[in-house]
Image (tube, rainbow, N blue to C red):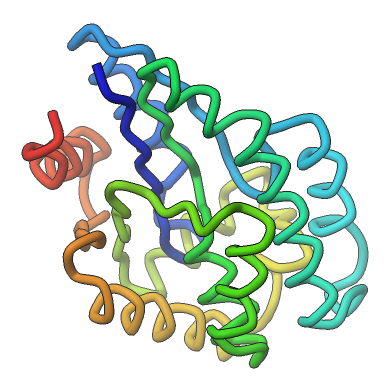
Amino acid sequence: MAGRFISLEGGEGVGKSTQIKRLAEALRARGHEVVETREPGGSPGAEAIRKLLLEGEAERWTAETETLLFAAARADHVARTIRPALARGAWVLTDRFLDSSLAYQGGAGGVGEAAIRQLHAIGSGGLLPDRTLLLRLPAESAAARASTRDGGAGDRIGGRDASYHARVAAAFEALAAQEPERFRPVDASGPAGDVTERILAALADLL
């Protein structure tokens, strides 16, 4: 049975972590092996880089430095976790992947799409998900959810101002429009169970 690679994307507070868990349960109930992972992170080396990326003051790194750190973490994640799981036929569900770098550092940070895609080609062989689910939620609803998560502490990227996150949201929408064959927008409002049903519908052709 062929493995499948699914990424969940979106801004802060849209419910990616919750939906990864719910989707994994649904897929396991169908008999699939499922690997749940995240970015930055997902392998020992990438988790070490995660601490560098998410801890400290908001301006600890330039956008260019963030881009390089994310690319390095992703290269290790792909080599150590994602490709081996796909090779044995597992479904890999990741909370963020390349598109987050394109939206955050590329779009909101101004690094640009071409540079990030070039780094991805070098570090991760250009690997893309079979399906990318873009969870959509109004900015005010997402901000309210994010403020209650982890006691509202947040991290150095999630804690940036509203204008930054508006640029992130716009970049995600542009990516989805650019690759409609890979992206599926998902309404992330309402009860978690309803969102999971929408996600499963968006994956129906792969199940």
